[in-house]
Length: 294
Image (cartoon, rainbow, N blue to C red; front, side):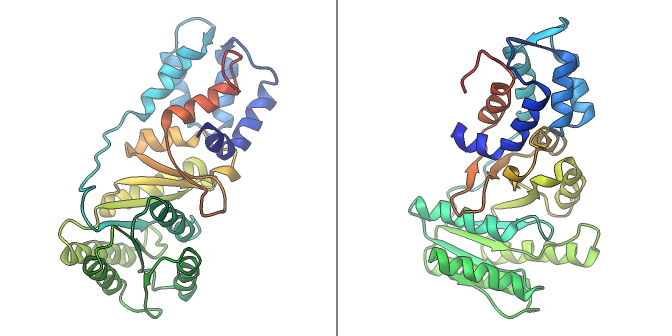
């Protein structure tokens, strides 16, 4: 698994090597601060990290690891995981990679032997429906869709009722890429959530926000707005392999106090991996400290 995380953090690790060409047994705090800032760890978090390290000028790997791990201690409620179907609603702005992430998530479930159904509730753009249909065809996964401008809540309702009748394990519903400052679209998203619950009490069981990893910490305010609208349960970070801002995950975890469930590390259907904070931190520290595995 470390190999997949390393792939996603490749550009971040390259940046570390520029700042610190040779690995060290102990790192001075000034260099560590520079590495963290260049990796897009928010300034206030960098200051906290330095503050909570031992008072010596140079610190060991275990000291840094202890402090970094504290940022991923959040309440991770897994609600109604045994529900059948287990309904997930995917939200986020245009361009974040929602449709591709839905396909990757569906592919993961299919590989686990689960029956999956997709719902194309992004009816504002015909291209969004077509893109999800193409992925469904490629992965040989059924999909419920309709014409552009049809009521997205109706599509969500039909998807869930179909999944119930067919004894489907997992339902993944797409939504329009909405800007968080557009009130009418926010209201539409709330309506979809209400209709999901009418179709199947308790649904959606998980609302997943897709954040573009290349945006770094600028995505945090966007995430806070979505969380206020519908209450986000988990986050997926996309395009992690395309950015040197791998440290921004510390800001996401600290500010939102929500679990990062997966990270996207490539373009293929298999390039969505479950996020493990320990592996993530270990990969970053392995680029700094000599007393670590390659």
